[in-house]
Length: 425
Image 1 (tube, rainbow, N blue to C red):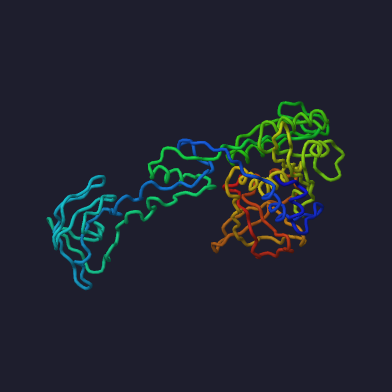
Image 2: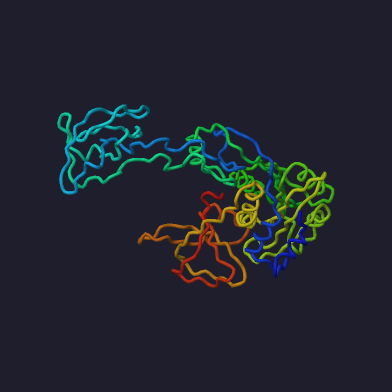
């Protein structure tokens, strides 16, 4: 396991006083080691879990050539380019059972969707394309071509081929795919546990009486929501006052219980509190000033307790900064820790509905509201006040306008990247 100093030495131009947002993720990809413990679970319990090994298909899907729709199956060798085709219907093939026998020239078979294609037949004409009179159908010229409306054996997945890859997070479609292969269980990485707490003497918990200069803690609840959406087991350690003994106990408890620790508050460069000192005392930690807005101060490293270590993410105290740094850095790092592939944020392009001031040399994440303009294109405007304490702006927004490190001012109508919240928080 590499130390913080060793990782820093690998990164050219690493400067903890002015580290770029892109370099943060590079650093974290080297810091975080994926878990290895696995378990077998049922498909109904597998949503959101990460595959621990490739799933090799035991069968072909579909297991046989079959009809893609209700219609009439026939041998395409009978098609004529400019002439209609008349065929006699000699039976019906239903889904779930084979149809015995072979057809002669001039014959066809009524067939249901999913039914096995009988031997010698390779094409299906939909019911609505033909005119039927008694036991005969008339096919106009040109309505179908050879092989139309036939699903081929294994055209989705062939037996012996990988159906799902290690590191893939299982979504609803993957659950259906597993079931289509007849697999009742799947091997996944165990869930990681993430402990989190807020720090500061000024932080109130819900139920505490208001007092002058104090604020109610919101960070634990936003962190809880984002962790729950990510699919990890959460350990809420509450609010910890800025007192050395209580901070030490909280860090040791968190490291003993969890694979990762998230704190909020106490990592600003100028703060005279005990949180940073305790982080250094108990682990291997780096303190950064990230070239970004919001979310400039951040601490990362490991806290060691009882012979095991937990990855540490010390986030800023302001609520919007907590959410932005989680989305930009913590979420992809935890995905890697879970054994998965860190997902790059999906950035949409939209036209800015307003001028945005931006200095090159830092990455900015402005809360935005994306809508569709009259011409059908996407348009985005900010929520207004971009202060890192304005949590209501994160409620109003449906995405973050990402103004990249080297980007400057944005004029009305310029295209900007937007990280949409849907699927992330």
